[in-house]
Image (cartoon, rainbow, N blue to C red; front, side):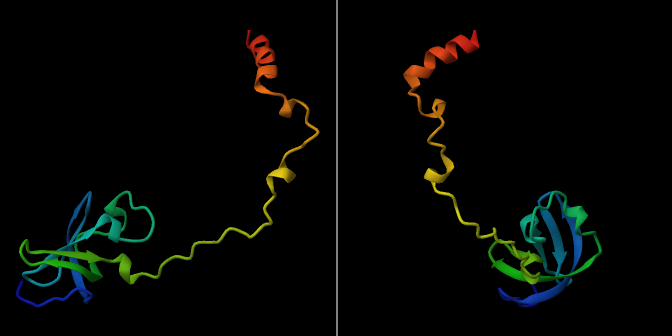
Length: 123
């Protein structure tokens, strides 16, 4: 690595290769990093090629640098706005008492009483 990069830096690069697990991005003539498939965008990514192509210029954020192994982990997703997850509507929840019909005679018979009836129905 000739240029000095730091974790958190946002840099431009060019996609040099696509694999099932992510895309390799060249940051300069001597430095390249990997954008793991999980760091391409929010949501599920089945095929990296649906989002990136070889030769495409991309802006990436440096997540991790392993100098010993010479590896740089990159993210495109970190530079995107996080999607808003719609909240469930706040409906008043029915209590168990309100959901159970106490006048339902069959629903409150014991298992022993119902077992004979179920055996007859299954034959």
